[in-house]
Each structure stands twice: as C-alpha cells, then as structure tokens.
View 1: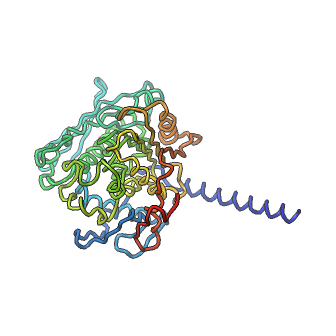
View 2: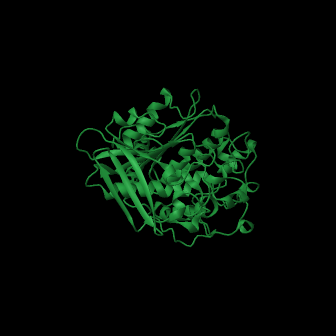
View 3: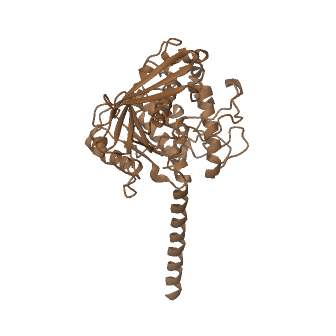
Length: 422
C-alpha cells in the first residue's frame, strides 16, 4: 500500500513539475511585439516555379524548412520559419507587401476624433483617415481596428462596454473591394507593384494605420501593446493577412473568412460548392496564383500556415456552417492543423475557433458572445482567468488527422479516410 501511495505521489509530483514548466514556457513567449516584422524576410527562402515544386497532397508541415533540410519545433526557430512562410505567401499568392514608407506622417484631431495618416512615395501622396471612438477618461486604452467600420461586423458594445477604443480601417482608401489593377490609390505610390493582390495592399494599409497610431501616441491615448483587428467575410480574410504580416497586433478575430481565409485550399478541393482557389476573386490575389487552380497540391504552403503566422499571438476564428460557400469543414480541418503550432509552443489558450450555425452571415449570435468576450478580456484587458480554450464545431465525424498524419515523417501521403481516426 505504501509503495502504491509513493508511486501515486511521485506521478503527481512529476505532473506538477511538467505543468510548471509549461506555464513558465508560456510566460516567456511574448504576447505581442513592438515592431511590424521581427522575422528576417530577406532570408534565402527556396521559391521555385510551379514545375520545380513538389506535390504535397495533405496539408504542408508548418515546422518543415522550405529547403527540405528537416524541421524544427523549437520556438527559437519559429521566427525564421515564419519568414519562410511569409515569403512563400507573398511570392505565390498575394504579392509583396511594401515596406514601411520612409515618408509617413500622422495627426489626430480632437475636434472630430479623426486620425489622419499621410504617406508620400514616388512623388505621390496617399491619405488614410480613420474615425476613432475613444472611451471617456485619460487612457491609454486598448483598441480594436475594425475593417470597414469601427468594430468590423462584431457588435460595438463588446468593446465600448469594456472601455476599448474603436478605430475604423477605410480599406478603399488603399484599394477598392474589386480593384482595377494599376488604377488604385496604392498603385500611384508603387507603380511597379500593379500585379499585387488586394490582401497585400490592404495589409500594408493596416500597418500604415498602426504606424500612424505610433506617431501620434502623445496625443491619442492608445495602448499600443493591446491592439486587435477584426473583420468578416472578405474582411475576415483581410484581418487574418494583416495580423500574419504585422506582429504589433495582439489579437485577431477573423469572422467567417471562408476560402482564402481560414479554410485550407487543399481541403476545400474535396468539398462541394465552396470557395476554392480556382473560384475565389482574381483581384484579391495575384493573377499568377491561379496557375495552381488545377494543381493545388503543388502550393508549398496552405492556409493553416497563414493562421500559424499569427503565433505566438492570439487568434480566434469564427465560422458559420449555414453558408456552404464558406467551406467551414475545410476551415475546421485547417484550424485543427494550425492549433498544433500553438500547442507545440505550450500556448494553446491563444488560439481558438467557434463554428456555429443558426444566424445570418456576419451576424454574431448570442451563443458566440462568450468566446469573443473571453478573447477580448484576456488579450486586450489582461484578464488571465478568462477561458480561451475554445474548440466549438459541428464536425465530430470529420477525419481531420489524416491531413497532418505525415508531419515529421518526410513522406507527404494523404491516407484514405478509413485509415486514420479522429
């Protein structure tokens, strides 16, 4: 009996030590960064043309180096791996995101609560204006950047009731929803990048907006360590890309982003009438991306890796399976794959997903309020007790693990559905 008790106590002690190590590891991994890119984007990433790319039928391994020299799950290597993924996404999908402009100024008017950011490049000028809804008091206040309007498609009371500032990103001031290539505001500044996709341009615009917040920090009391971004549908994709390419964003809430957002191109190809790579908008991406429309398995990345670029920061994915086009089954599989990155680094509570039916597109139902509020409370307000371990979905029979079963083996084979269980 004494031996059994000692064994039980020993196991409990080991468990306690393990949990302490995990907590310590999470504490040492930053929640957000002070600069747009900590990654060395000039890293020599292997970027062959489509003929030189290998076929990978399952989801690509986010931990595998692009040159095939192995993989690393060590957080100290994640910075460089993020750089590789980012280079691939820019090269094959959205085009290069311009660097921070050398000539950028900003001002804030207390009279009309308007933030104005002015960028001058190539002897031309682009002006961004954003209405800022500030809470009463002195601040500094956490803030959410809403695509299109101050809180995106999320109810504004989620933020106003918590004294969180709301800042609208007027994306059409950078590029129209359906761009005319070469004729958009950003094209005047960067005439050599007329081939860029909208998601590269809009991500640049969000970064310029954050640059503006930094420049007027003495006048506009925004807590730059606690910035969020949110949007829905095409704007949900926008929020996801913006956060992937700007590490100053602490929390991302991508609502019903569908194909080109949270959903994985490879998985979507196996579904019905959904937004696949070949069916998505050509103007949102580079035209050259569509060479993969009949050969998606040759893409050296997929959108679980776009989400993974947000790590180690916080990300909440919201879905709506009532709309087939959104490919939420694909989004679920992609989320399960992306979550492996946060899990590996011992920060599982920083990634969550909630796929809930019974409501209109871009209309947050009452049932989804708790998970949104939990992420806001924890990552904008610092409430460490908020429960952000969120995995809500209607796909209990979907065999997600077969898409990632090959990771770490070097053999990218997609097992038949019957060969791998959940």
